[in-house]
Amino acid sequence: MNSLESYCLSFKTGAIVENPMKTLPSKWKAWNTLIDRLPELSRNRSLRKEVESLPLLDLDGLDNHKELRLAHKILAFITSVYVWQDGEGGETESLPVQIAKPLLQVSDRLGIQPILTNEDLVISNCIPSTLPTEEQSLSFLQSIHKPTYHGSWEAFITLSAECELFFAPILLEIMNAIKAQDPLNEDAITECLENIVKAFVQFRNALKNFYEDEKFFRNMQTYMIKEHRQFLQDLAMHSRIRCIVAESKSSRMRTAYNQCLQSLWNFRNAHISLVKRFIIQPSQSADARIKQLDIKGTGGQYINEFNHEFKPYQESIVVCMRNNSYSVDFNELLCIFIHRLPEIECCNWPAECAMGTR
Image (cartoon, rainbow, N blue to C red; front, side, top):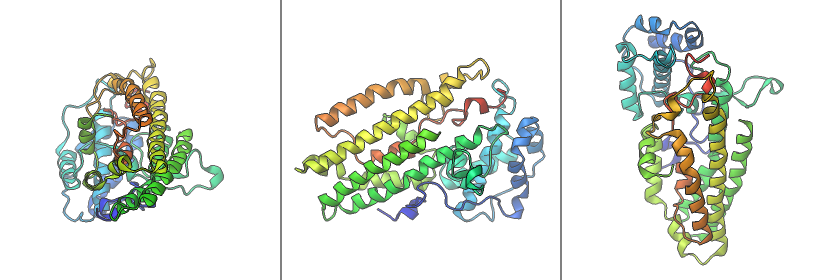
């Protein structure tokens, strides 16, 4: 496999962009101004008028990866608020060329979908908090931009980012385990698996604060930047951990492997509980009036249906583990976290933050 940096991943921050850009060069000042004003413009529902007066700007001069990521974030934020400005039932059927054309162009260059995704909302949208410790709320991070004026955004974005950060140590163990395949070093692989189990404890702590079918996972990859997608493809190509464990006589290795899977499912359970608490249950209130959760999300999956289907799948994995039948490959540990829960049409927004619902 290539170096982790070539996949735009980091041993320090995982998928989170280190030192993300906050503004584009002066040529794109109009875009910079608009994203800074999004909360205000969403409150008074005047964004559409502002967008229609924008100049049509091209991408000439945006050459490095961070600039392109920021351009996508700005355009995706603007597009999402533009569409949902008047809430459910008031969606627009078309976009002005001033945002549609550059959004399609930058999406093509990054290999990502031309909509607001986790890459924009979380991955390239957080920095360490500059507030004094006593003034920090739930997170040691802070967001750079928010789509609307709703106060729930900050915790939603930063706690999601914390989960990404806690995954960074697991990347190191995964890469070390791959290296230990050739020449084969079972002790090293076992140690990596044991360290992954320990890392899941940090995931659980992060969650306190705050997809099982292959076709679905392949579809969700289209919402990532191409480097992250390539990392998953290369990992699947190079990983032989499952076969090594199945053929090994080491009880320690089998135990470590099973504990990795068990820790994964424990985390998934906690993750789904958060989805139910902060998305599904609020959406069912009379105040929220959101129907999107009963429809398909951007991942093509019904989120309520997904949650119902997850439990029996999880139980079948536990049975397989007890029978020492290794039906889940090692690289799925990574896939589960980079392939997050289905991004619903409102981009997994907290229900009270959906446009026009409050």
